[in-house]
Image (cartoon, rainbow, N blue to C red; front, side, top):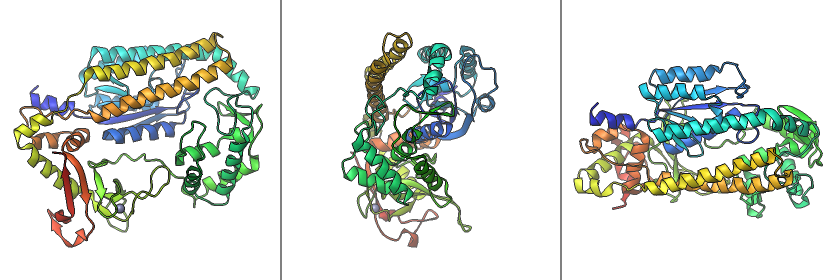
Length: 490
Ligand SMILES: [Zn+2]
């Protein structure tokens, strides 16, 4: 295998997303669509092309389960055909509870393009290295242990607790004190207000804007986000219902909303006219996200496809972003530009810069391996601590109250470590240029992640100036290159 083909191959990130509903696991992203949205957003951030989405619903993940996983098998077929480099999941137990299954995939990685299993919390199981394989095996082992615990004592306990309407573990629910039983009146008033405003036809976005402006914070003390508030107000907890495995039980805590209010919110949510706001989950790929700005208002521009309509073909475009995730107005929202010619222009400008070999050498980023290892270890350490709490609770070392309290703190600490790692990884994505390739060759044979990291190395900003690009022609596009300004970091 020649250097250049090794290089091209090592840069491929064709990604399969796998999601599964597992009934015997409490906690994280239960809903399959939420898992897919989370993974899609992750792939989008990384710039990985998603070539397949596979989901298995309603199937027990326990090692005793013998039900087939149809989409899982379809995904393995795609791996065997060499179509997949990355399997992306929200957490390891989504994929495996049985070691034999993982071993099959490790074998496949030897003979196909499959290179890694990636979780959305930033862990990369590199199947081409002994360390990566070892880490993957450990993760599955841990999941099996946990499943064993879940499937015996805790599971029995959980069901009994649910049927008695007892509080679920986890952080403090908004509207209640940490015990989950006592209403916190100031927050309960907010829940009632939000429900009434939503029923009355107000948009979630406007409500979020208003809450944040009034300094009303989530139970975690954060600003409200659109997705967060919509999920919160629909929780059945607020109508005094304890849910467990799809069943509803009368809860031991007092309700804040009436069943009627909930039904009316649900009716509005399901009505055809109402568009439930979505987070950014698209899988379209844009080179300049984070680098491109609106020349009219100075705000950020984001990739935004125009779908096919009235015979006009679909088109990838950059658009000035009007509101942020909190619903605040951050830009004019009035500028658009076709993505293709902008990206072509930027590519040519970058190639021109890299034609100077001295520039190319000085630009190579230095990834601090020790730092990455340190961040991963810290993250693993905090996660292990969280696991230990579950064990302590299961073996009655901790009382439920102690467990709930300690778990909240441990989860926040895991989250913090995870974000630190993700942030560093983003900063240092390698953009090395192999000796035997020109930037032009590398550009054409590499994926978006690599192109983006190169662009981020040399470009400070791309500014889309206002004007009428449609009146000019450039390389067959209705596009005026004079209306694009590139600001360099050099
Ligand atoms: Zn603008």
